[in-house]
Image 1 (spheres, one colour):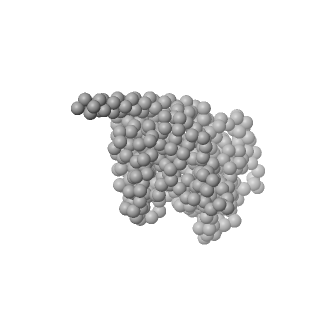
Image 2 (spheres, helix red, strand yellow; image 1 turned 135 degrees about the vertical axis):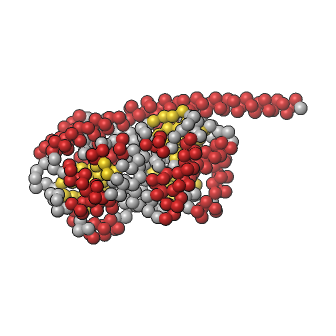
Image 3 (cartoon, one colour; image 1 turned 30 degrees about the vertical axis):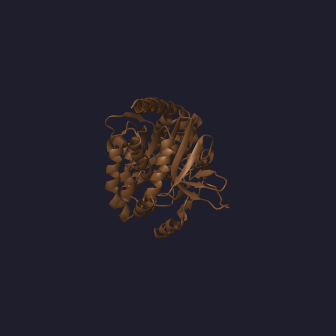
Length: 414
């Protein structure tokens, strides 16, 4: 069975036909679907790389049984007018060749794939991975705010009518985008390797034995392009309380241009304390980076369920985050602040900084909670959902084939 998967994700490709992701969609993600389906056609946005381009920091998304179909963006008004016809033609051809459609929402390409799947009677499922309202309202420009209510209502309608819907949160996205009649699944798209107990032991030893003259280390993982990860909020919060904290560092791990953040750090008199760590390969390198920080900050404006926070928790790291998206499902209220509220974030930081027993309790709780995201457990949940969708799609294919045969027979008899 061939399934078409659609989302607005940006893929990078070169003349050799290899496709790369900025990090979120390596080939191992497609293997989750290929455990159930035979072939995949991945529809997304694309950018061609020069022949000499450095792919450091990108992950290979190409692999066996996966084909890519690159589309122009439909996320701006000009392209909606000038490119939609081309997208419709290309998607129509691909969907007619597919047996089923999976749309990851919110996304313009996902919405268009659902519209065409309905038109041609193809079975479809939706993956709800983020909030359309939060993503656009907090994007940082007027256009995003104007489009937020339209995208929110459109996404609600698409999810509500879907025969299959799987969510990455336990409750947040379900409340915002309820599904009324279809089969519902819950499975995080974040999965981690099971950390050994020694990880927590080392974390507790770090909390108990941290030398008084060693800087307190705060960390944040997120792209420097845009404001959704709350980097500015974290900088302003730390600036508020720098005289009340011991010497500290704020380390930021992520891709993108550093200049605007360096300039802001300098204006806030934090320049020497802020360290930009660039990009690291996923896995061991990131775990070691997390093991070197004392507090992980997730002051996001928009999230589904943040991978970085879950990875930090799996290293026993205390976490302070905003109430955006599914973050409140991960950490308790005394570790939360309102998105954009740097004063409240500063208060949360001060409430825990240097308090050994509170930090130990956080470390133990976070490490235990991260066990819910161990790959083997999630694989089983996810596979049961997609097996159910495959069975549904196969029944639809059989029914369609039978109808076509009956139509041919009626025409021949006439």
